Length: 354
Ligand SMILES: O=P(O)(O)OC[C@H]1O[C@H](O[C@H]2O[C@H](CO)[C@@H](O)[C@H](O)[C@H]2O)[C@H](O)[C@@H](O)[C@@H]1O
Image (cartoon, rainbow, N blue to C red):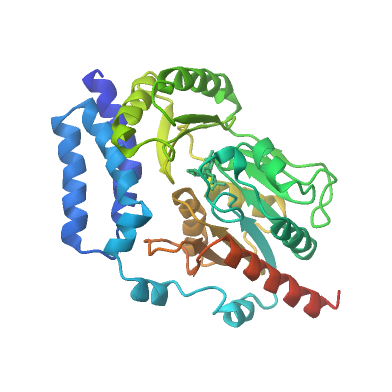
């Protein structure tokens, strides 16, 4: 990798991820955080391109449940991010008199994490709950997957869908009972479509030598999955990704759960999608709206942060393990998400006499 290209990729990744890695390991000792961070920076400066790859892989390892579980204290984390089910009455109390708007991530939130991304099905019970939820409140699914794919899993026409990390937003097919007028569509990255397509093809070709590697075309972004790759081959796979992306200065790499996501360098993320949807629903700068965002991944932090900064609504992180987060509350797994949504529905039905 040429040194200037390497520098560019380094800056892009370190800016986005080292900081987050520090946050991810938030409750462990500062020494641990500094050691990991130093190691990443050392790798970057000593090993040139190889260091960048190491930093992706180190960061992915640092976020793995086994690592987090062994390093953090569950009890203090739960004090800072109490279980949303235990705090249900308090949540209702602060939302009183306001319009609740629901934002839900898909993978790991509505469906359990599985090895094969094509088989991340949502349960029938979850679908029934979502259908009722959408009758009670405006409801949006915000996912890293392309919109069509996430729709095929959820299959509910009455929802808003924001695919490709919010770069592809569409409103309900029949319009919405919450918003009259023409149907909603927002695609701020259309000019990148041919580039993402080209990169996707190259990634498929380049990574096919790595057993278990899987590249997903998410329309405005692409995902390279590490989950089914033997950990001893993670460096090789990250190297293959780096060798493709170095030719594309207009793309950036972010990291999710055992996945590297390749996306356009535009200031658009799940947080922007949340703001856009609130504005489209007529709730921009409103004090009587209460957005609830539920998600499990690093990309959901952009939305949690918006809500925290605006002191509006609340974020709920889905995680069995302590993680530094901008969310206020926690839920452990999709089954708990379903219970929470079900309680919201029952409360609203009772309240409105439906
Ligand atoms: O924003 P999300 O809806 O959470 O999408 C993020 C990525 O989710 C999917 O990958 C994750 O779930 C897979 C299925 O459980 C799992 O195999 C993988 O390891 C996870 O990273 C999806 O496949 C990606 O395209 C999304 O970007």
